[in-house]
Length: 243
Length: 236
Image 1 (tube, rainbow over the protein chains, first blue to last red):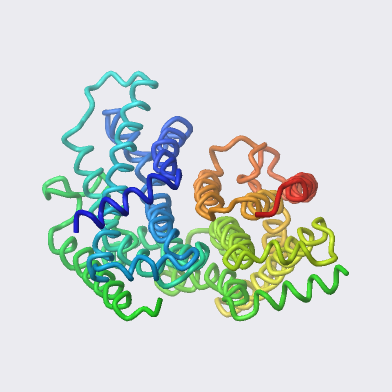
Image 2 (tube, each protein chain N blue to C red):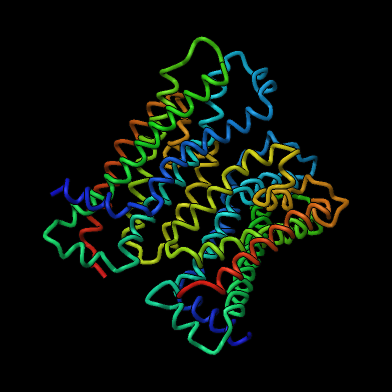
């Protein structure tokens, strides 16, 4: 397993595409420094107001979309010049290849989440927010956002293996992500829509008594359930894929 | 020559899903309102005096995002059709000029987007009729909100096609597109000169036709820049 992981990492690091991860904190900085905060009720603490508006755009659209791009990136070298054939001709199982790619992918998303955490802090410093940085709340949001993307990343990895082009998996991603803008407004449907979970789990206005900002059963059923479905779907598809 | 190139390009996009996306885009935008009005029609009708305008506004909240994302997908698709099989070389080796190759790609996507806009008009009009939003149907506003976003998005189209055709790695145009859609989503806070703001038809003067005119002129400018850069570059 480890050799596959390191070869995956080698291919990725040589493709000079990792700067994509920097787009996360850049978008964070952009929203944090331009958005108009007056209409958001966030209480007296300025950090909360910042977090509410930054996390909104970041988790609603950016995070689901960019993780899909990353999934296509880790499959790119195999789709070119018969890369799948060469990779799978080696003495390793397809299952392990799939899992390695998935682990690499979620590690990248974690790095991007941490960079985004840095950008939140930077926005606060630039704006000179006097209160101390509320790390006990922010880490939940950062980690929760990461957990909520796990099923979406699994689906995008599946789609990226299925389609050769970048545009096709991205189109699938867009079709599911755009309705989120409407879905999060609904108390009835919001909790059950997998693409709305990054928003719910990064939304610091949620119930703070839970470890994350959503109830455990919602986390287990919606995030856990869709993860099982998408991961198993991708895993089984890859076993059968003709290369 | 141009007509033949166009025919070839339309042949190439056959059965690749581009036509499906052209229909799905406007349908999706209206379908979201079908769900929205289906779930809470009574509440939404209470919100304003003019139900038609309120409905059109709700639709236009999604139009500009769908159109920016649609452009990203279509341009990247049309570039990867050539990229995937290293067909640029073969295409350019034909007795056609590089400029007309580029123009043909641009025209194909413009036609697809135009068809999308017509469909958007049809879908939003017919669902509006079905909702029975009142006797006075604001035809002019409907037309504006169906076709102005398309015109205002031409600079984004020119930019994305340029990046997609000159990038070997399609991650670059798609990432630029993701940044673009975040900008489009933040249209309210953007300054008026940013091209990603224009499809939302918001501007400081409150006159949507300014965005359409700006889109048309800057779109042509960016198109020409992209076309000459494409011509200048080596085909790999």
